[in-house]
Structures are given as C-alpha cells and as structure tokens.
Image (cartoon, rainbow, N blue to C red):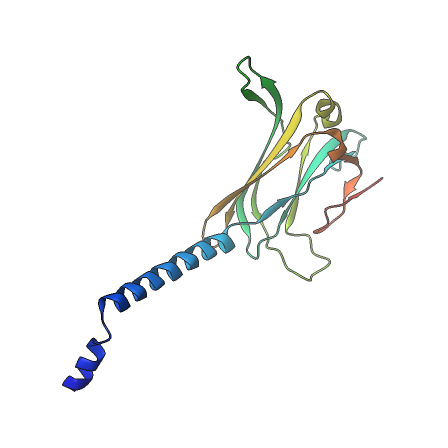
Length: 189
C-alpha cells in the first residue's frame, strides 16, 4: 500500500502539475466561451424594409415593416427593438458626428419569440414584424438613414445579445409583404 502511494505521488512533479493546471485552465476557458457563444440569442434582422398597406386598419394607409428572425435553438425573451433616423455631420476638425432622432414604431417590445426549428418548412413562430407609419422611402432619400437595433435575452441563461442593421439607401425598401416564415424575401403586391 505504501509503495502504491509512493508510486502515485512520484507522478506529481512540478512540470507535470503545471502542465495539468494549464491544460485544465485552457479547457475551462474554451468551454466557457463556447457556452457563452451558443447560449446568446441569435436574432437575424432581415436586410429589407417592406412598404405595404396597413394590415390592421382595413384602409389603404401605407406602413413600413421590419422583420426579425430568431435563429437560436432556444426562445428569446424581452425582445426590444429601437429604430432611429440618423444623419451624418462632419465638424470643422474632420470628426464625423451622428445625430440621432427617434423613429416611432407601433410597438417596440415582444415578451417572447419561439425558438428556431430546423428542417420545418411551414413554421414562422420564430419571426416577428414591427411597423411604422413614417414614410421611410422619402426620408432615406433625403440624407437620413435608418438604424434598427434588436436586444433579446436567452430563455435559459438570461444572456443578452444586441443586433444592429443600418439601412443607408432607398434600395432596401421594397413594395410588398414579407413572405411568411423564415424567408427573407418580399412578395410584391
């Protein structure tokens, strides 16, 4: 028994202990970063704006719609979107300033968006659209740009993620409705 203990303890040399400690530390760091990367919400902002008839009022008023898709394998909680106009001004010293102005949305918060289910073609519960009454077609042509930002929390870990997309010219705006589900296309009227 004493020989077995001595044989076991002989493996604990300083280089072996340092190597094992460094290896364990490195594997822990890789595991944590991998876990944090997988467990953050993966929200995709569709890089188009839909210009369409208002689907809520039954009249022919025009609205513009933004679409987001939850690409995570887990649901997203506390989804909040912010839309802003911004202009770019250059100061005398050459520094560029961005001046922001709020773009009003009909709603900017959703409590929960379901998870992404791969290989399920007729599924769209992981998508959401946000509407504004503002005439973005006219505004974006007049040296104003639109910045759309989504903040969401992971349903299991509570980790947050922020995605941003900037619509910098009028070619992002298309007439028609977003195709239902995970599609990023707009179907013309």
